[in-house]
Image 1: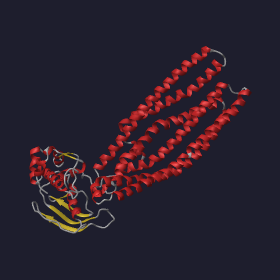
Image 2 (image 1 turned 30 degrees about the vertical axis):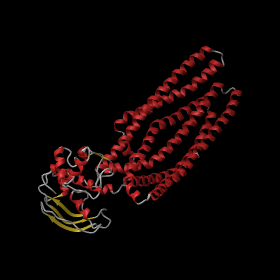
Image 3 (image 1 turned 90 degrees about the vertical axis):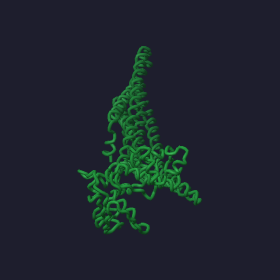
Image 4 (image 1 turned 180 degrees about the horizontal axis):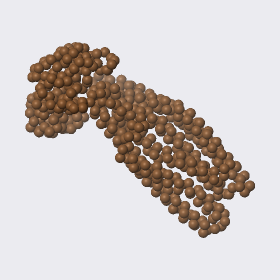
Length: 495
């Protein structure tokens, strides 16, 4: 999974590398500031030396400015790297989905794919940005602050080590329980998106059957399932803050009490104690940030697995090594074909089909619902591969052809008519992107679609809404037939 995701950083490697470098410099400058503060107190204020106060004050301003500049640059590079990384993830998933065969698509629900490209990618983006920034800043700050504390007073530094052990045990206990919950949560998102998608796409049917209350209840059930899981997870995560604050105040009180004794004994100066308090807060804030990182990584782990599944999914149907691009004629032969949607298991939809259709011949395939008529047709353009036997077009097995050449030669009007957002001309050119307007008009006449198109105020430039919601079912059917007829303008044979 990690290897798959990291491979998508690509052109943003430079920004990814520069972010932690500038974060490291920001931390170094921040760690220096408490030392300068101690110098101002001990060598300046306590000694009554204003020259030292001004000198170290100027140095502090310069160091603070450099720290700020490094922080700004780190934020800029982190934003570029994380957003670019997210963009690459979405592109990688989308491009791989375009190569999926129907059998690949059957493995993923539409709602599930949408969730992976939106919610899951956003989780990974946030986790990635936090990793290259906070995951570098927090441990580096922690180590540098501990080193400075040990350099100031070794005995007081033992307090931090005890705090680290307590927080580490609490953190890993919480994360262990939360990670299992988040794996379930993101699967629940698929159900929620499926409910929304079905309701919006079929809103006319919902209203026609007065099923608004039923759909609302279904949505609420899906939403409540996510709510309950998140409440359970967040309730566990919420324990992190009180534990953290208890340790913070415990450390401050203990250091104050022991520090006062060391000052009285002459083993510690006031400036050094002030520096220790600064380092205490840096250490504890680093621990809080680390806990946030672990929580975010736990949430994103489930998202990362879901994204990697799509990117790593291998298309079942690919071009052969030396594909044929020319189809001799329109003959179609089914040679003892068996077909099942799940290869190696599942019941066969087609069994021992032996069918031979001559070029130019017109036939009708008749049968009851679910008998395999659509499955039979889908095998011709190799939308699925046969389980056994062979399907031949022009005397050659369809597995020998280039997929684009084969599908450009096979015109199919599916049962579910699909139109895309754009003009009527845009939709007609799906079958042949180079078709002229005159050619589009010709195929519309053949499909008996020209009559209603010309009645539209904008004619062939009429805008089609998403899913063809502004045309009737019959009009959608005729536009789809016209579109498939336009495919033949590029093909020398009619299949």
